[in-house]
Length: 365
Image (cartoon, rainbow, N blue to C red):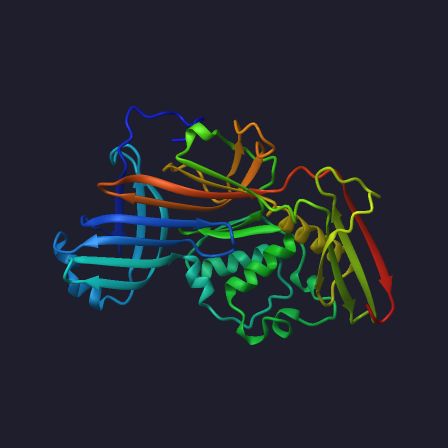
């Protein structure tokens, strides 16, 4: 239980697994892996055979579509929280032990497996997200956007069909592409598709101290602690010109003009405008430096943290005491073995200075 979360009168974890709308009484153990990687959450469940007459070995051996809802409770089953809903990808039956093991992904899988050649050039990103959500019976939780996606394709063609996606793009690839263009996050939670601005460091954070956890590991990349520079090189076929945009973050203790050679990352993206290239450079810079400090936490399971939460680490008496973005939460609940979770979160040290510049050229970069 988190330190700033109301403490219950008792802590009695309970597991509920629902398959195709029916509760499975033989559910013994479940693991749910939630992430912040533009990817599907995953789950695994172990079920004892012989307890549910309707869900014997013959059911698991023949059923072609299984929708699972994995729910955890901390109050002895008085109230449950659904951690993941999704389709089972594989079934493993062990007749000798009388066990069934189920592995699957959340409802993002429907978008991942849906191929598309549509480009929606005259629609906004939020309109596309809403359309795709409804196509898969997902509830749209969408923040409206105003820019037609055709504006992202400067050479007057639909780049989504002619660039790296070609004819093999999926609806999920398209949503991730649009989310990156908008500076948004996109994910499926329960039966809702979320397309909204990414979490910021100013968002509400959960406080955590070493005494609140089972194990705490602190890791820092000294390479990423120094000056980092991101260069975006692009050419605009419509204007027949090429240019580069730069974004730079000074490392902790560094100063502008110190002479330190920055660690440089170069990306080539076709048909961007200078403003788009600068925005892209800033986004990639923020993603890179966020890997500088990583915390790995093993702790008693709770139901309040999510991959979009932030953790305020306190009490280490080091520079690791700061805010962190949660990346992954792995929760495991055994009916007879308790409820634990592993959390990985990351962020950079406070950066003393950030500088940006641009350079233009003719037909070559």
